[in-house]
Length: 249
Image (cartoon, rainbow, N blue to C red; front, side):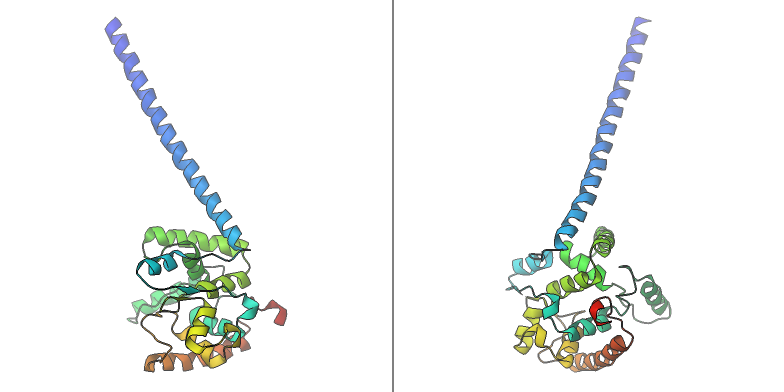
């Protein structure tokens, strides 16, 4: 009887010990999750006012032996033509969505189902979140983090700030990051002095700046640039950049 009672007590102790370990593990996971959430919000809040010093993609390019050229330029010193061109090229609904454009996602799936080439539906906000805070390689972890950071910056940054950060950290090939570096290298001028044609040309190569060249542009880039010039007119007519230039309304 005594041995039976002892075995029950030992079993109870083992069960209690296992439960304690599980409780500690769950507590660590919960606190890690809380710290991750709070830390990401604090990180985004800092970039609301201060320029990002760099990106993980810049580090990746640097480790591969590429020389990085990057300089920050306030949005009011970047040509409004470039803002219009980028919206025309990358996200015409930039001022209308809350970071993730579900309408564009539906249209992309419809095109794929109809046998058309699968096109991206990533918004400028999503690209900004990815470029500013995350790594470049795809995967569900990265996409989930991208969705979360997109929600965060759309909540605590105005659209104008999202555009400002995007234009200052976007990659334009050959180690060029940001509109100022691209304008100086490609056209020998500041980003504030870009013409509509130059702005459209820079925006045309954004989806693949390593394959599509500005100097000199190939037939496809020339065709895409002409198409963007037309879209830029639509962006202006329909006030699709109004959230970036609210003072011009």
